[in-house]
Image 1 (cartoon, helix red, strand yellow):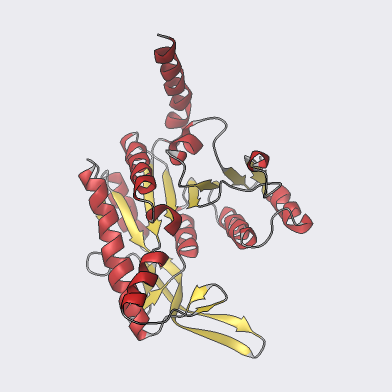
Image 2 (cartoon, rainbow, N blue to C red):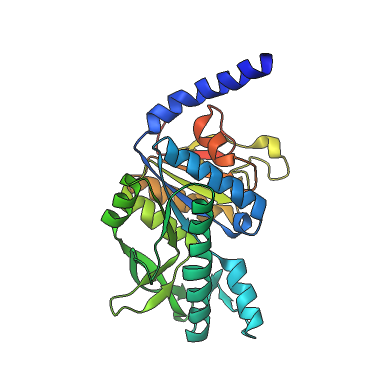
Length: 292
């Protein structure tokens, strides 16, 4: 009986958050650390189905770096990275299209359907919703060309929202079309950020292989559960946030400045981390807000 009461208490705790976020759009960025672990992916997709069932409208944006690298290796193509971004020539772009836009994208939607949910893969042979232009990086001797790499400048908001209103989960690969209809490879973090901004989402949730922002990287117990913009910038200044976490946090702050209410960084490998972050008071990751 005590265990049953504890379960009921958990549901009551979740009730307030379910009512608060009912009808609100949430963008979830799926990273490779989750997609490379079948059990972790299954639990994430179950969490997404739960969210849709209680009318919190999830939108999935995903990458597929590890799967792309494997396909390139099979084809004998050596990957090349510039400032952390994959250089994308025509041969690489074809692999990215097949693996990311079709194989991975449609597999995620299919798994949601197999588990009893409803999902729609939004790719180049169904309905594309991301549009953009080529991306170049600044370098000491001028702009650095990344090949067929781009960034998102426009999102087909109405198609995504109509699917959400119809009870379907939109599943979006991190690729876009340019003005001439050419395909471009897009960083998954920046694609998810663009979608969240365009939708005016309630939340952007970044699923990664870290639990969030730690005061001490060697101490998991130093997790910071909530940060505002000023606190986050101070942690960057003092070096508590460093290395690869800096661009992730800066992207979160940029997203907040574009109207998204909260950004969360959580470890997608933790079982039901999505539900624990959204529907419990303490959460399991770091939420970043403009102001408390």
